[in-house]
Length: 267
Length: 299
Image (cartoon, each protein chain N blue to C red):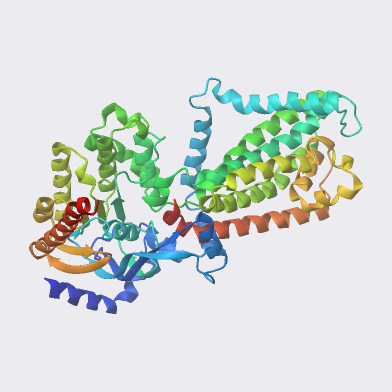
């Protein structure tokens, strides 16, 4: 499990081939079980494709994933992190992967920050002793102070993200997935995160980054991919992709603007 | 830049073989490819994580409550008084040819303690996965340990409780049966049976939320069709088939034989329920392991 981690000379990457993710929308929860038990002999659902035929290899630099809400960014990260399974296609990851998905990295709200940090390491296959040595460093970085020994449920959302970021980056990861985590932190924390990301970039780690802040993307990412409606629109240099992204957002804006202005006339 | 990336993709096709080298796979990959047998054996590798959760389960029970660690003792004692009053004093149920109330209490507890260990684990298993959406959706977590932790911690409780029963029996009867040492022989199949049911119900509970209500009802019924508050012989002849259908009744009888009567389990009944237990455990784990990949879509 962890024997590949030491070997950083081997390229650490995430490779996706023809990956699609379909969510089956069920009217009743029992329909899902019926289908599992009948092994798909009968159909009880409507289909929704969150991601369609996605092929890409994330290399050892920083890649931004851009796209409007609902374009499949989070699904893509969840697939890479291995928490949801692709409907079709293959995903190969090489190296230790850590992820900060939608704030908080699998934390248990009843457990203290310390216990959660320990648990986080154990889930990744790091021994308890090794992880204990890093706890102080994690606390120092997350700036939780005495709250480190309080249950997570007493934390503010900023504190949770700080802990999540500290855990995910303190465990010698090779691949780091970040899903808009930085948007919750204050300026001081953002600056600290970006400094650490820069450090990881120096170490040649694979970083995959979802953000709606174009300035951060411009400053930190080497390349970008653009998603729209579950499909990859384009990939390449950040400066080529950002204008396309802005266009998509703008067209959405004008659509909703139209809807808003046209509604009163219907009434 | 775009062209360069595309070239990269096609060149990766050629070294795809090395990418899928099992030795280099990380946990996320492993989850997709392991068979349920490998998954079961893999439980041993994450034993530290399991112990961590068992310990946490213990702590969680005591923390924050006024009487803390006294509850696991107080709870069965309260029921003991209740059931003894109802069944021994009011309804005059007798065990093992003795008329004393103390004797009834002993027979009741040897059965009631293992039964509670089982029913507590099973009833909490139905909501176990739903309680931890973060572990399902945010990280790659070996979810199969969650339903397993429940019977481990309740059975540790049961062992402590049974040790007290044996001590009580020593005061009452003046001797300890040597067959007490064979307790694991019954405890292990009972544990496997419970763990199997926990896995199955934990998985079903994710998809069907009414599972917990149904389970609560089934457990209440199970308590009375299993000879816990009455000896097996008291069951009318035309209802005896209930005992043969229910593997737990064989186990309960054997707990009493080993701890109180100093007899060995009857071999046919023992082999039958042991086989059933191993089978239930295997099916339960397989079922959970096969369905757990869809949990993230539902929770």
